[in-house]
Image (cartoon, rainbow, N blue to C red; front, side, top):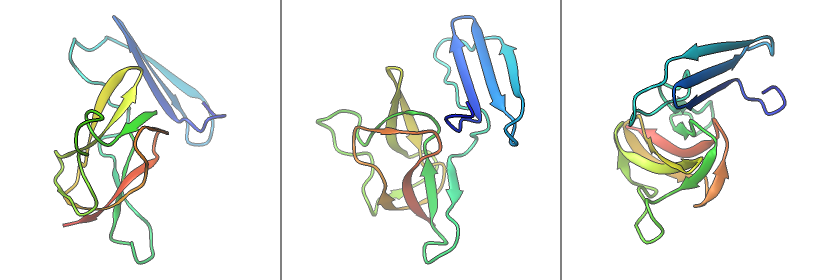
Amino acid sequence: MKKNSVTEFELEKQEFKIRLKRGGNGGGVVYEDMPALGAGQLVQPVGMSGTTIPTPGGSAGNEMEIKSPMIGTFYRSPSPESASYVEVGTEVNPETVVCIIEAMKVMNEIKAEARGVITQILLDNAKPVEFGQPLFKIRPL
């Protein structure tokens, strides 16, 4: 976890679920064994209640970033033949799906989680993405 700068990891398989959390100072790891979720329920990485955070300073100081809540492959549309979910200039609300991240053959819809206008798309389609990597920039409304 330290080698790859991962601070939290969660895995669920059938009736087993484990969460690993590395301390902020690089210290110990916390293991939790919890009952598995029911079928059809999604798991969101621990501590990721929102994926939008303010961008610090500069002329873009009022912009926010939509960050990836997981490692996977970034897709701008639901299929190669479909139009992209959003483009620069698209107005979004917290429930607007902005992209899909494929992780372990599961397509995870990523929502804006904020109200605003897309100002930048930071990745090309079908590119790998890391946990916490910025995907989009939005200007809040």
